[in-house]
Amino acid sequence: MPATCVIGLQWGDEAKGKIVDLLTAQNEIVVRYQGGANAGHTVVFDGKKYKLSLIPSGIFRPEVQSVIANGVIVDPESILGEIDRLREAGVEIEKNLMLSSRAHVIFPWHKEEDRLMNDAGVRSEAIGTTMRGIGPCYRDKVGRSTAVRVGDMYRADFPEKIRKIVELKNRALPGMARDDEVKATVKKFDAEEIIAQYSNYAERLKPFVADVVDYLLDAVDADKKILLEGAQGALLDVDYGTFPYVTSSNSSGVGVTAGSGLPATFIKRVVGIIKAYSTRVGGGPFPTELDDEVGQRIRDRGNEYGTVTKRPRRCGWFDAVAVRYTSRLSGATELSLMLLDVLSGFETINVCVAYELDGKRIESFPADVDDLARAKPIYESLPGWAEEIDQISKYDDLPENAKKYVARLEEILGRPISIVSVGPGREQTIVR
Ligand code: GDP
Ligand code: IMO
Ligand code: MG
Image (cartoon, rainbow, N blue to C red; front, top):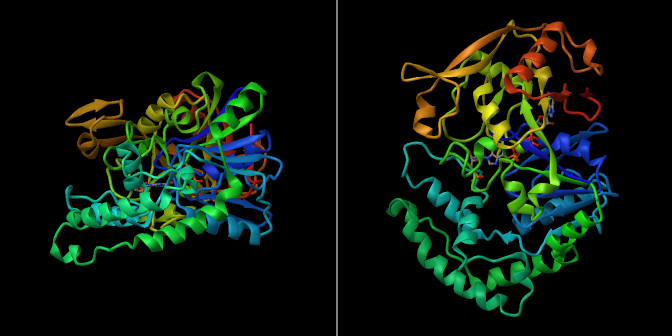
């Protein structure tokens, strides 16, 4: 049985969580394979809203195995908090959650380093990270010497390793401060305190830790139905996104195999998740951004405030140049169009179909972020619709202009839109 993956095709927050929850019903295993607690995925059902950061959005179906694979970086405090909150809400988490022993672990120095580097002033505009220690932890992973994997926490040499790392970090971190004033604020870490704290976390996480690669490869052999849940969005991919205003993992389709160990030939269905407009949190160019009352209206109607950091999300029109690029890059076989209800009441709706760059029309997505920053959107205007659509359950019942919008996006993007979402709830989903 080939695997399905769910990939955000914009700058994150495309409502991947809702679709993963939905598609979990047709699968036996759901896997998170990259990112960390920078992700905030929302699932709404029975009038209740659940926010997930590290735990797969499939966790609400206890018969399905939820797996956190090696490409994810794990903040133990964050995941244990999440487990506690879910248990309190009556969600079953026992044998149905699995954590890879190969996943890397976030420590407090990663968050401190995140703070210092975001403030380093190397670029005029800060990346504006979520401050969850994501970049520094991935940097340690690639650098190897000071990295700790989940499995390392159970080894006899763990305390010794932590003592050495703490010594190094305590020496290195002050050197990352942009000036003496910031330097004076740099935290100092106590190895024995960290050892005690993380040994406690390790004990509590122990029932979930497993060799996930072995488990997943067996699942492939047994023809199990596997769903892969991407975090962030393809435009935040460290290689293919708007570098350096990206996250530190491969959040486009290319990250699936590296992060999960599943062979590429096994992934046959790629569901690209798109919002009916665009949003972005943090720094970096955003050609269709609306810094006016239209943008504010989208923010209000879409409740566009960060799940993790509560920051107001930057809002703008749908950028078909960017999404055509990311859907090709991620090999999207179909698309899910989310938050279409937010666009009710706009007289006209714009779609960016090309950019003007230095006086020339271009239809490809610039590789260089400074070019993207100069790119001006060329819009195609479509007529809007006045009616609220959040109660509509049949595609044919949508207003004509809403259907025309969907059809036009399919045409520009060259892919079928198989799901249209008109509200946060499970039932507010039109499957075509
Ligand atoms: P994710 O990170 O991609 O999982 O997305 P987030 O959870 O960060 O943000 C999506 C937000 O939109 C959440 O608050 C969802 O509850 C909400 N949502 C999902 N689908 C719809 C929809 O079709 N309409 C509206 N109005 N809200 C939606
Ligand atoms: P989900 O999975 C939206 C953004 C941050 C910042 C940049 C780098 O909910 O879609 P990081 O902390 O990863 O080093 O921050 O990436 N970012 C997200 N934006 N949704 C997310 O996740 C994001 N995860 C990171 O705002 O611009
Ligand atoms: Mg989110």
